[in-house]
Amino acid sequence: MKKIVLLTALVFTLGFAANAQSYIIPKGGVVFSNYKNTGSGIEGRTGFVGGLGLSIPVTSDNFFTIQPELLYIQKGAKFATNLATTRVGDTYINYFELPVLAKINFGGESFKLYVNGGPSVSYALFGKTNNTDIEFGDGADVSFNNRIDLGLQFGGGIGIKAGPGDILLDARYGLGLSNLLDDPIAGTDNELQNRVFAFTVGYAIPLGGR
Image (tube, rainbow, N blue to C red):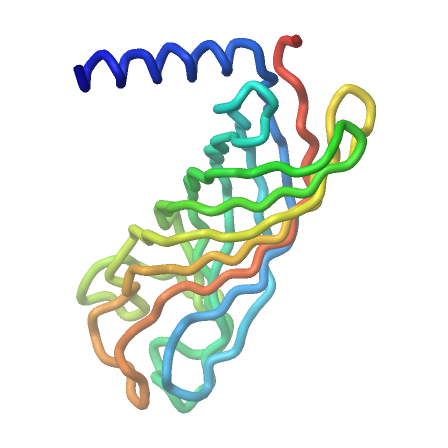
């Protein structure tokens, strides 16, 4: 019986999705990042973000959608000189990030509001501290132990009809859950977790049509 119910729900969901509109969303913008840390002497920095999203309808009216994204994003902070000689000054790491967001849309065709949230996973590609390359793993002079950053993202925005698609103005908060290093830093609680505010502009391009 449970299998029949699940199969029926799946058929209805696919049927709704077939009659609804999917969108591909190129986007880009600015990020304001910092680390969660109880020690003093860490300041935020400004970076960038860009990539693509895909809006997949779950309901026929696009009220509820799922939006996976693939982003290139820069995160980091500025360390004061009294913390540690290996982490001084401007520090950033560039990531590939994959959020998968549940999104609820309000409003009509010409103007809409939305809220979204969901998990994300990021993979560190490379980074620098004062023009010195960051190495990942133990034993390096300027090292972070963890390439993988698991997190949660929450946000919202507005959509404005423009041509065949919509201009999207999006604001989002990224809460990093992974500790980026294992070795102690003087004067801190030995935890570095990413904290990111991201502000992007995107354009939702309809795929196919209804």
